[in-house]
Length: 158
Image (cartoon, rainbow, N blue to C red; front, side, top):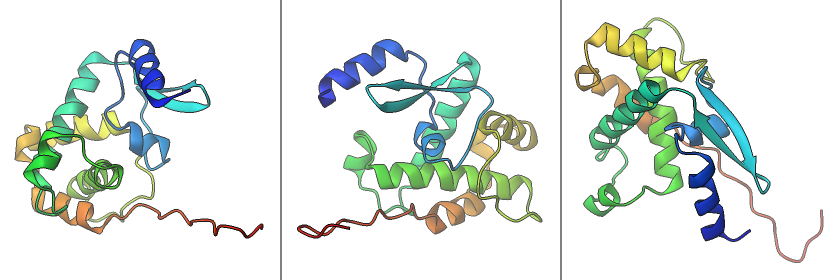
């Protein structure tokens, strides 16, 4: 399936996409509102909650605007979609930063158990997503680096 056909089918099938889809698909977090599905051997994630999706989208927007310096993002990156590496750093690092801000004495977990629960706890604790302690969150975004895939060498068989 070509990329354009996949995107079209994806948007038809998944009207309420998960804002943290990249983090969920890389098994860095889970969410009680997330539902995985497959299209032509590719996975996607659907959000089961309108309110939850709006909260997560708002969190991602706030994290993205705050993380521009930490990710060395340009104003052009702001207008367009971020490259996968920067997007995954915002998603995973942002969630880990939120966990650290809410649980400063606990170690950072390798996998966030429930995105929606973490976001709801943050809103309840800090009052709004604009009042998050961004210095703590940005430390986690800066520190998180996605796994680098190894490249196969041409001409050599395993």
